[in-house]
Length: 214
Image (cartoon, rainbow, N blue to C red; front, side):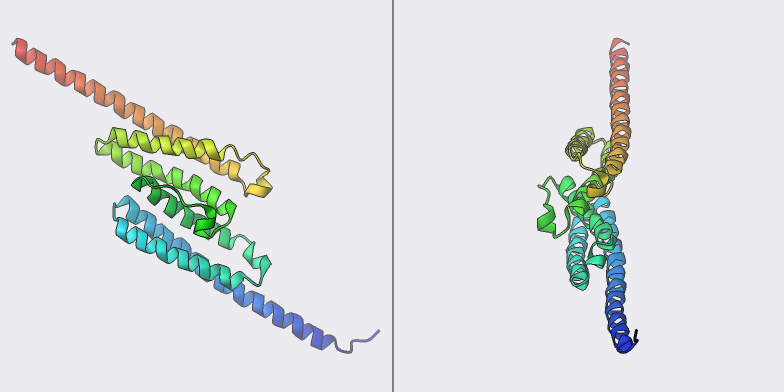
């Protein structure tokens, strides 16, 4: 038994791990920036500042490409979850913008993300749309809120057809369960608002009829 040449082999292994570590740090840095950028974009969407939202989402796509390029030679980093989690936020931003603007959704391939990131991002976009629907209700846009609820319902119905093990979908069932709860709360809020509006209309009509009678 001999240790001859072991130091050379160890140096090669160390050099490889140093490359992996550098790539991992770069991916983590970009993924954090990607999440922050998408979060800002979603805030702009809710503020009806669509130009700013589109600009930030454009930046997010560039960050996603950079992140994947940094991890391209290291599969253990590419599929470790950092990329998938941050790209899910990008999908959410793009999907929410499409929902409020009435445009078709972009596919996973068009966005350059994995299928799981796309599925979870779509589910979270549908959940995030609750806030938009509530704003419509407060502003008297019950028809708009109902249309948004229908879109949320449609996304949920489609996502629940992905009857695969959680190991393949990254726990999509949990995302669907959370979305179902959001949809039910939104439906309840919309129903209550509709009932209240009808009562107010009847009361106004009753008061007007009383004035006419007097």
